[in-house]
Length: 489
View 1 (spheres, rainbow, N blue to C red):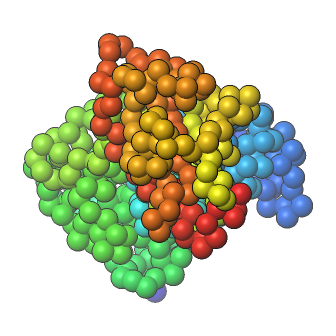
View 2 (tube, helix red, strand yellow):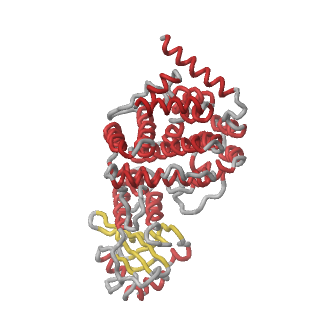
């Protein structure tokens, strides 16, 4: 008991010194106002947006997130803060606002502190991607807990640089772990200082709980949401350490430990670790770019590439263009959730990211199975153009007959099909038709096109991109999962 009291006193002494500093990262007045407003059960999106608008960086982050595929399923760009707030929900806005406190208050610190901040952002992004991989329902909550997981170390490096340097030297000279060094030289682990500041900042209680030393490090299924969140914060922290905080010759052992501790509970593999690592780097670079902060010292890509080349993690799964596409996995997980039209809209939007397609349509077969008509659209498709997407299904030769009657995928960039009435009506220079078949019957089709083939001449019928085949399969599964055929339209 006396040892615990001594640790509490040591933390309180450091906290008291920080509070006396004029540059202590206290909450800005408008952020305090924002958090208070979000705690009000009667808060409106308009009132919250007015407070957010006082902070340019926070506004940019929220609008950028609102326009991501996770929230914006319409394909229309969101520019107004009230629209973004209403779309994302007040809980998500709260987590983003609280998270940006740390970024804003430490952005002007010395390079060493900024490096720790970048590591914290990496941990946050690792935790969020882990949440997506393991179906945790509130990804921004995982991001927030991952971000503040290392707050205590950031505070020590910022306000007590000499003591922080002593801890690092002790760890290096004695081959000691972080906790051992902190207890010996500071009298408490970093997490305890971070937890006290989190409480002073009135952050969500979940953040303080993941900083509690009694939080279990290893949990097996089944587990509660609270335990799941603690797992995600720990995973984000450990993956960052394994990839970016230890020498290359120690990475293998640390990554092996990450997989051993977290893989089973969070359903992770070496391949998913590779995707998570690359995604986290891109998101962290984007945040630093928005805040106009340098990120050169970490050499993030080089460190991940070294791990890849050494076989420590697997490369992320890619589409035919070489771009990672975790969003397809998100759609697959949501096949039984939400409305059918919303799911098909997401599928169309994701398909537009493939090979430069500009317009997309979901076409619905008539009850008599003798015609098809466009019902949903995405991208540059407008109402007038979609109105042209109505054709009889005839037995004469043509792309519709080949694709829908013949039940085969069709990718046309040249040849006679490009001169057909179908292609001329839609003014297509290159198009893909994918029949959606359920229990042997064609229920509809996915259609993607662009006005003209980019670059040099293409084959008349190139191979259909893998992502579009997946789009077709997901559309069929989404319709079949509802056991209503196309009654949702």
